Image 1: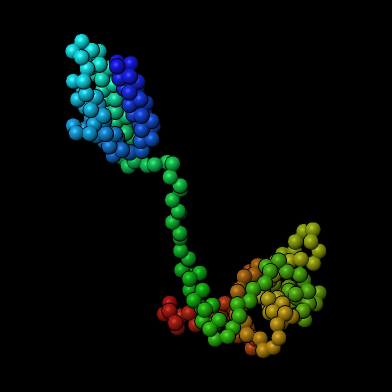
Image 2 (image 1 turned 90 degrees about the vertical axis):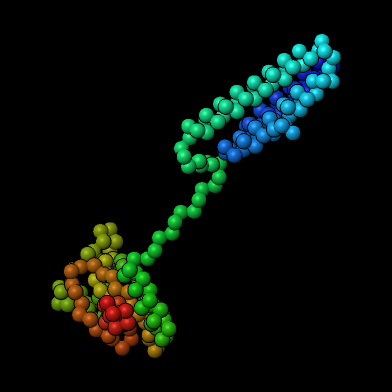
Length: 225
């Protein structure tokens, strides 16, 4: 009977070790403690209640085995509790998937620009944009500015080494050229103004397009900036 008793106690010890490996928080630690030491349904206390089933000469040996199980469980629970106490106050489960990163927001100028775009889209315009690295043809010749024309001297032109005939566009008019080549009349577009050089173009509103520089008076009237 003692042999069967020993196997049962070893089984309880093995189950406790498995439960301790799966523990995730101090709350789980208290649940394990109650599972083994609660007065009514605790496993260890249940072993003590069954001591009366043994003959008087066998009770000391059976009680010794139960005490060894109790001491082992209490020692492991205390050690695990100390490990939890040594952790930071905010307990983090590193096995959980990474939380989503907070999403930022648009810059104020970008936000206003998008609102202006919505206005022009609403009244039938398109938002046109083109490459910032342009060909000499689209940047000059298609605008009736051939080579050696004096108008080219008024703009700082940056040529790309190793790419013949390729430059950083010096104004937004190449976008108009590309737009007119790919669309049918009537033309209604708003151009995004980005170009290289120090030349400052004066605001104007051509019949076929509206540039971003011309949109600021609209923004001022709408948003009172």
